Amino acid sequence: MPGTVTFTKGHGTGNDFVIIADPDGALALTDDQVAALCDRRFGIGADGLLRVVRSRAIGEGAASAAAGVEWFMDYRNADGSKAEMCGNGIRVFAHYLAESNLATIGPEGIAIGTRAGVKTVARTANGFEADLGAWIIDEDAPTVRARGLSVARPGLGIDVGNPHVVVALPGRDELDALELSYQPVLDPAPVAGANVEFVVPADPLVQDGVGVIRMRVFERGVGETLSCGTGVGAAALAVRHWAGTAAPDAWRVDVPGGTLGVRVLAVAGQLHALLSGPAVLVYSGEVALA
Image 1 (tube, rainbow, N blue to C red):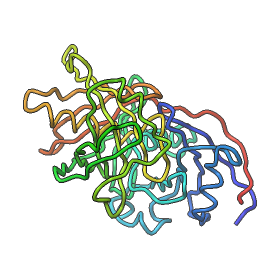
Image 2: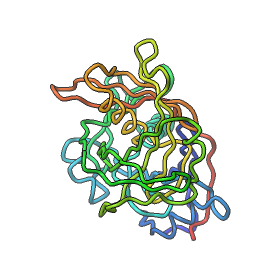
Image 3: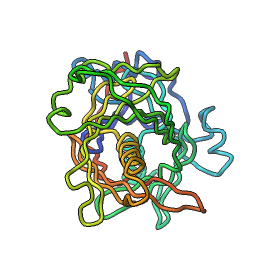
Image 4: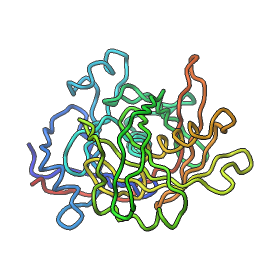
């Protein structure tokens, strides 16, 4: 393994990533090495790491390779643990592929392998849009206790390729008062953990045909982040579920790092959630591996 690696720093609405190109799967990054690279004081600093690897070069990419998908997003949380999907990360990943001339994003977008299956990312006027696929709602989700909430609140489970629990709050004051440097406690605790989103609907909820909500998130394996793409999708889908049959299919979600869009669209006869927003590459360099 080389002593140094080339990296690029990128982000989507402040949800930031260390990107390492490893097309042939030569790097076997340990959890500790990933955590060191993502450390904000002693490393580069990031919410997670995106390893750019060919699907055929990673065991978890076998199904993607069989489907003819060249690239696989090996996403790792800031603590080094593996994650199924990352909505902001996959848009940044696609942007990196295009800017590095590793792939061309055509009119139909580009297919990218993930641990949650193959996802398609397309260019948009303000960045990129990722098809998160279908989702699963779990009405029997845990209750959630968090520093700043006087009592435990009920959550709604939403799986968009990775697990989320969404909690509705009545107003922005309560949202702002949350102390998310402490991990929310889920009861019962999901075996694989979950990302936790706290949402406040706008008043009125629907503006010019678009649902509007504000969100903060505690990411599994990371902590509070400025944004979470799959969490944004989960939050919009949860509020859409609560709002009932008259709810819109287009949503604007404001997070501390900016604004993302979610739309619900029928794809091959099944409803999918699509996440749109910016993807930025900030700088590149070399770093020694711990």
